[in-house]
Length: 197
Image (cartoon, rainbow, N blue to C red; front, side, top):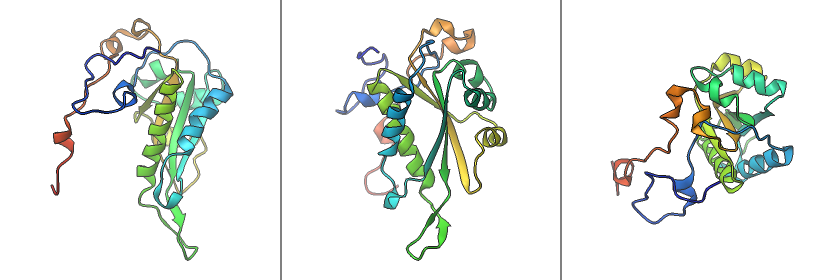
């Protein structure tokens, strides 16, 4: 992995390089990941913050060449199966919709999706530390993916994450090659206001 900052990514304010250096490529090499490497990615997700420490995220994973990988890949739509099928590992990311309250009653967990997003980001940053990349995608058939991973009732699917070693853009189909570059971000002033909206 290059430690150089990706072109077009210049922070407007001081920030640790891991943030602008993280991006979501689509090209992956043929390198497989060991189970230990996958466990490191999952361990990072485990330590994400969550409301009242409920940790609602649930991840189903499989490595390329496994039946579970093919099932997750086959639930992807659009161009996603073309490139994500070459990743070393796929994760189906879901969250448990409810939580036990202090009275022991199962109630809606209104922060489950928010907390699960933190777990995905933790996984993505761990991938970067390991010289890998992770790319989350929302392009999947909800029913097909639910069946592929035997999603329990009371859970919501959020995304599929492809992870592995970054490959050359030239390995992608032509329409995707030109998109294989880190995107910029809106300025802070577009997404944050001081005091109130």
